[in-house]
Image (cartoon, rainbow, N blue to C red; front, side, top):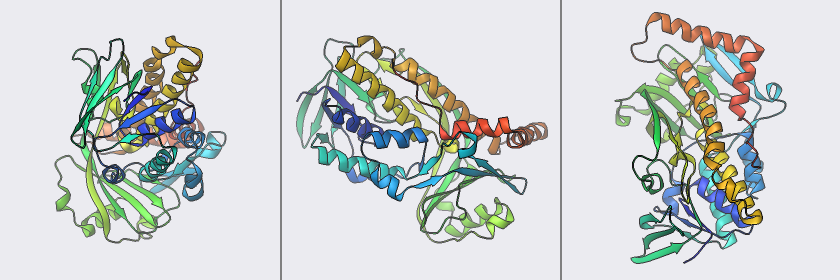
Length: 394
């Protein structure tokens, strides 16, 4: 097999990159070690930045999102038994976010990929990347028991934190930066109406809580739990009781509970590797960086990586701009680190940390008070939440 761009991973970032490149007449083959059903079964993010919404439209896959997604002009911060509204539209000159689940984004992209006829190799095993710094890279894998070799010009590693792409880079090349947080998020998905029209981020002495949603009839709620908690120890009733205890009373009184569809505990970490490229391999999304979900940045950061790589590849193939290939990591990392800072800040200011002394708790509260009580502070939160503009590729 031969192609121009080999894409490792058929999650939303790999599929989005593939769709954009296909529309531009650039050949791609996507290689995925899991089945389509497994990929669609992942329960992940649901808040899309303005930039990602625009990119999905540019790729021609925004029709259902625009029809079924929920445009949010703001969100709520709850603390000290009060609720503060962050008006995104007013504070950012008209920008908003879209509530549309990652599963739905992936489904739309899968359908577009099938309709395009561009190849996707699911259930691929023993995926290996070769000659990353050689003359011509290639990928080998096994599908249906048959060894396959895919020759290509370049490789996009869109296969996540545990994927083969980053692991294919020799030891000593990458520098890793990591912060592991001493707690996790217990999340519940339920077919119940949302407790509020907008997302609520709640800081409470018992721990953080988030009231999110996937649609007008499906909700996603989270509570902060200790890192050693087990999901089987949390009955639905225990979860709902704990969530109510962390919300202001008027909001808790409106909460409609029901049986959980899915329940899981996710650890929180900040992680970045530098550089995000090695020879002919470009790391995209979770393969290069992880953010705690507090800032709603994980999927959105992957989209900004996709946008950068797509625009570089356009100029590479259409204008012969070989020099731009070497700029991918620098361009991406500038935005990555700003988003990492915001996610770290939101996590630090809204969660309860084990062993925190009284002074630090007061500083945490004072900082939150300052940011919500000044226009500059609210603007800073809003600008980061809707997502900073994508850096142009020139």
